[in-house]
Figure: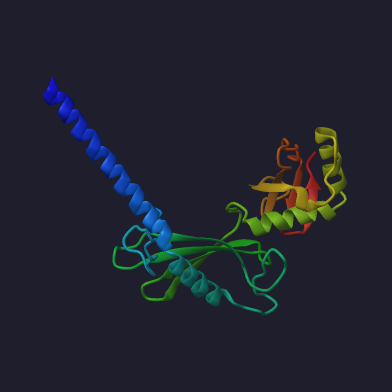
Length: 233
């Protein structure tokens, strides 16, 4: 019993001595003006994005930019019969840049554009490894999804058209208030290929305001090719 009591006393003395040493060390650090060490956690640095991928890797930003540059350079024609974009400016409307399957020895891309003057889809095949265009293909009646730029143009057309008042009235009926400006609207769209848009590039708009339901506009077709809006029967 006495041995255990003595051992306990020794342990208590050691603990008090250790605590006093720690407090003394801390006080000394404060007196010396040394800043406390604060643990820090840092994110590992992001690995640099390679300029070119391999095999079935997605296109890198560098490859995408290069494919776009090569394709648009080949389509550049500022003449009266050259392609125009959704705003009517010279040059085609860029829709998408996609990796294309190859023979395993070259990185390839397909650049999809739309020529609003001729109302045709234009696909440009690009060999990124060789740095050249390998083919240009056109088609009519094929309508890939609209780009954000095309959707914005469609919203602007509807807003300024006579049928824009009908759109605002539907917002008023559905939500209690009509939008004061087009900037209030959260836009979306899907391409429309029925009559009268069998050839033209047309979209149906999906519009709403944040926190509010979508308003039914499925009978209003925005014809981007003709620059107008048509109401379906």
